[in-house]
Length: 607
Image (cartoon, rainbow, N blue to C red; front, top):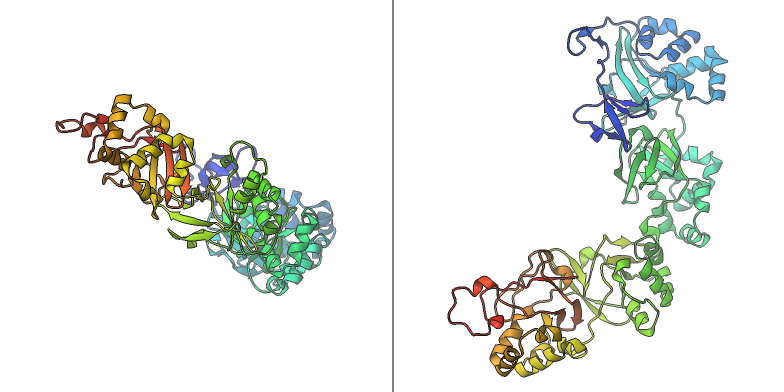
């Protein structure tokens, strides 16, 4: 047995259903009890002594269902369950009877020959059913006017009847079997739509269901779970948002289907958080925290297990809005992109974020923004270029694809083994697909290409010495022509670190200078997000650079300066051959810092 610490709540368990020593997030104590019908013998292991079977009435006493036994006698049921037959009795525990509202219990005991007898007969089936025979989704006619009891046998081993959990199953008797349950069950005669129709607390939900054309579904046969938002839940939503959804049949149907599971899930079947598929197609995490049932980790369920013939209703006090019913602005507001959201609004782009245009929003994470976020014309243009002109899925993107922004720029897609990037910004989370548009969460603020690699270098004072070296080596045309290059560009600081005599000698040797610069140029575009633990791009000199994210010595000064024909990473060092490649060589140039080798290791960190 697993018993939740501090409570009397116990669960039968075995190696398949061990529940990780926790139930609903609470620690459990493991104990051992005799199996039904057996008892211990002093000095012997286990419970070897088999008890003689008695009739159902007496078995109620044996299993501790004293209140059910007492009410059976008062309702003149004793003779029936002592006599011949083969019955299944779902016997409420003593605590179950005590938990009944006083007015209901008073109504039962004030009319024992009819009301109480009928209630007890509803707990009985006129055949013997072991827990193994209680199959998931099955139902059996009870002994009260053949009203059915509804069985669910869940993969985690929990068995329920009308959502009451079997807490002591399979207590055999001479004339049947007793299963002790944790609540008093009542006859079920209405489908879930009827339950919604008659509850004033669900008036807004009822109107929404009719408007979405889901009434027939909830009247049909099935095994649904409905997380039913109360009127209060709808009132918490901003009126503008609610009116938009209620006036949009597609969004409304998605919203309501997001509250409906494809299968029936009683509250007592939940022992931990489990993703469950909704009719809308996405997942809800249904879980529990102590005695609270939770949705997506939040305790918003106010009333549980209202059972219908085709499902169960749990009441919730907050409306669940799926991404597919949201505008771009609502998608962004519900994510960790608050800074980007504010900048989009401040840039005057709200109409695009709240309208029905098919767009894709590139929303950088909050920590991607550095320094002042003042809205300027340049910032406005930048934010406009974070919105693509069509609705996309990241799964449909391919290497080399070009995407047009609202600002008219063309952005390139780069597909790496470990990442998917648009220019320098790599996708950092799953797509959020809204009503009309999609949001990609990205790890960096876009830096759209503003010229060739040579243009980028000339525009940055840190590379003035490098620009002179490129011109001396006759490589200007290479860095201006179309292509896809990655340039690990030494800054002025990198050149200044070389002894002046060696630097002068290098600058006078055009071929040697060209070789050194080609060590720093790699084929293809490698943005920082595409670098793994051992990325090895091939240089124009023919060797491979080994790039890494760990075991680093020198960080990259600035990564991802994007150009139309490549990408520039500023480095404060000169690429040198591995020390091991120099040993044993006696025919190399005296300038060891620039010697050619068969393999190179660039010890750099991208930050």
